[in-house]
Length: 258
Image 1 (cartoon, one colour):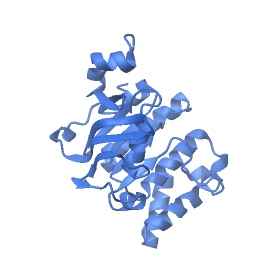
Image 2: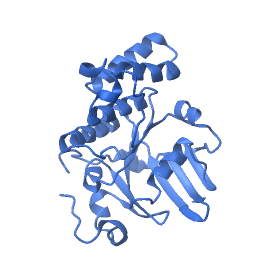
Image 3: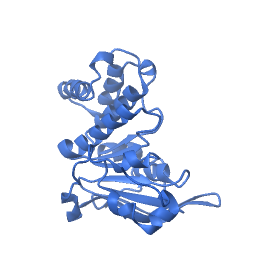
Image 4: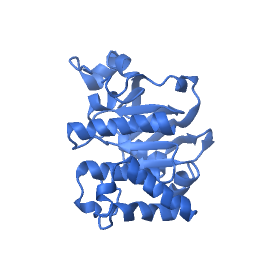
């Protein structure tokens, strides 16, 4: 784990909140998905979400970006309530980027055309638009495939492309839904390094969820366990795996991070 995250970012402990979910509740028909959930992301922090299938991790992301409205509770970004803001305003005004688990790109467009399509919507200045596209292509080492249709590139390349698309609008908050799913070990390590680099060099605050617990814990500052619609435990990776509630509902007794 230390090969990726050699140190835990400390300055976010000043607790400058950039995103806060306050008493969020949501149910579908009679099924309770989220139950008075509280979650906070501090400026410059990488926060991981863990929990069993169907516990509501992706639902949390959809509430943050505006695809779902909670039945109760507040979504606060930089101390401003954003519940009534639509998706595009949360993207542009409140600087939220989202990387979904599946898709997130135009299958029949090339890598360059994908980036250009998003940039034309989010960047008015044409000179800066071109600069941003070329910068992202370089950053994610997409030059060899820039003119290949996205449908024909590898799974790891697709994930890099979708992250690049989310960064076109210069987000301050980046949400990553299962970024390590179905990827090989080396590609996962590359993505872990990219996530830490976005925090360290771009000052982007990140929330990611994944079922690959060790891979997630290798690149976060803190993580939270979601169970029965609530946060039942939260802390640094080392502290979290020793938490009795986290062990009871998620890790089990034999889990280790190395």
